[in-house]
Image (cartoon, rainbow, N blue to C red; front, side):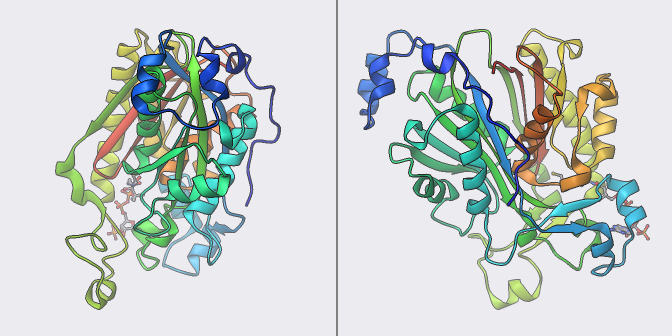
Length: 371
Ligand code: COA
């Protein structure tokens, strides 16, 4: 498994000088929730990212490889999607493997250890198994013995939903360090005979460690949304409580992705613009304030259309969809890691993150990079 973040910069000073009660930082066992709430009188008002990390599988699946699987061409895939290749897990490799590796790198980047974690949230729609959660598996493998853990859905918007959830726990004083992971292995639910979808997706994981930061920095504003009337536009029909797995559902291919590409395309372009503008407005900013726009990497044409509508110049829009395809909940944090590595943003810069996908759901955030 490979990662793109090469070195771990110095942990941010704030991680050590926060106004958080020192007693909490040195505890080895979690307090009861009620005592946490009552003890913390000087609560931080915001949360920020201390460190990020990512992991993608080693195996590369190129457009040329796909030409041997379905009737398609490198030229069609490249011009319609911008994708050249994607990473696919090896046999036996699962979402929690990628998630754990990404988490270790994020912790290293943050200068923290698993014992520092209070909560682990894993955004995924392709868990290793229906239950237990990927978050439980990651918690055990990291040895994060103090951490609570749960999984979160929200598909390709899941990582930003996870950031929003983590922020609440930190800002209200309930927890100090929260690990948010976006991880998916969509190759496990792709219909490899459907050329309209199988060329689009890849596997990967990205993670962020969050903690308290001074008010006015870190995660400044969120816009979260859902339009369940579009549920059927992008779904895996079977394997849940309505259509449990059976020989018939398998024979019908109902455990694989079904998508109305044209409708999802229109939704994506519209919601990326609208959600980003709403989050900017909540942060008291405009598009001119965005130093780096990091959106869900689904299709370069969606990204180009949305950034054009937002009036963002190309040098402020990051994309790496050509290398990984659509990695669902992992795509935003993987893109963040690579953008940072390519010096596309620095301390003090304003980032806009936006995700969208099945649900239909969407999420965006405006944040200051404070490392
Ligand atoms: N290779 C070659 N031809 C393909 C193909 C492929 N991989 N996939 C579809 N085609 C064909 C179609 O069958 C169709 O042929 P027809 O006109 O003979 O019926 C033709 O290409 C055009 O298909 P169309 O659906 O109009 O293409 P498009 O320009 O809309 O692009 C998508 C299709 C899927 C790339 C595009 O709709 C898309 O990206 N949608 C959003 C999907 C997405 O991002 N989903 C995840 C969101 S989180």
